Length: 235
Image 1 (cartoon, helix red, strand yellow):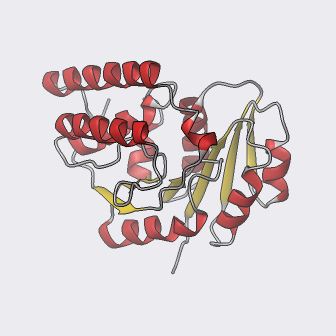
Image 2: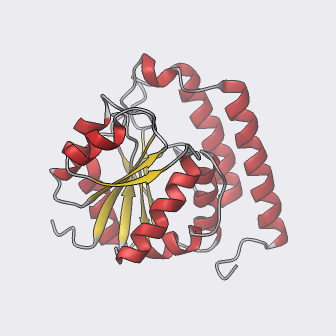
């Protein structure tokens, strides 16, 4: 499969001990790998470089949304046609990167999101319930069916990257916003099934009250933007 002008982006914060096999797996797909080290205090950057990634460093931790925006600017300036974003902790399988590339090339999709909801047997029940509820709300606001709105494994086209360059939130809400905006702007949205990989280390990252409150706030704001016509590609 030709993967010319597509790269892999991995935002990372204190992922020493986990990031090296992720980068090594991504490198094996023969796609350039870029790691944005968001102010890690451990050996994340060194491990990523040793595994074959280009590393961009934030001097201090600025949040996942900021790491994504840094990556977006770099990807655009480097002239890539699309970028596959994935997590650094091993929750996303690098060998599934070609699924996103194939979907992008066959459908010219601007946003391809990996959905874990085809087989949720390994997913903690609180995450399963949260994903289904959040995806239902996002579907209603986006005006298209979304099955896994919280998945961070996704491919973004140049059009999507340019739109997001100066927009979005500071944290995980950035990923919710981009789905709604892409659908409402008439960009091509697609999903591909991915493997659900979970363990205690990932289940502990979810904070039901805080994360749910932040998500509901974002969806409410985007719903108002849809009604008032404030989602526009030209700004």
